[in-house]
Image (cartoon, rainbow, N blue to C red; front, side, top):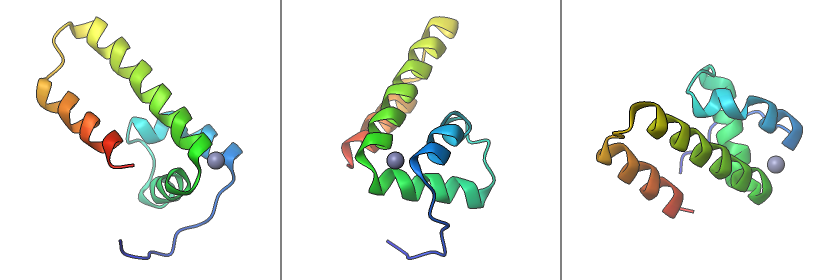
Length: 81
Ligand SMILES: [Zn+2]
């Protein structure tokens, strides 16, 4: 893992940006900060997984057919930790 100059953020800040993080709406810097925090903080990571799953359920309900490829990718990502 490359060590980048990532700003350290608190749980509160990470949670506040979590939904935007999941939607990929954060700028690169904030995205990295949240990601960094999630790697370091089990509590926020669990929260992120929960939100992510919730989002997927909503998405699947909305379009019924979620691309299998995407689901596998999300599964792989969560297995990395
Ligand atoms: Zn945290």
